[in-house]
Amino acid sequence: MFCHITENWRARPLTSVMTVVNLIGNTRTKEGLFIQSELDDTSYEIGKKVEDDIMESLAITRCDFHGEWNYRLDPRTVVSQ
Image (cartoon, rainbow, N blue to C red):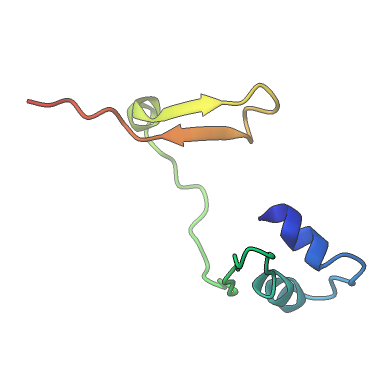
């Protein structure tokens, strides 16, 4: 949907966070898809670390282009008992 969002806000000055939230929320496609958006102003704790064994258990497939940013997270394989 990102291509539709950028098309929707093309040539409009992004003067505030609420302008961005409203432009995203008013995005529609010809096929009827739409986006709901709202501002999340929650303060989140920083510096929280995930333990190495938990990270290693994730099914992460990194993309060739900037794999540190672009990746796919697949469901974990369930082992039946």
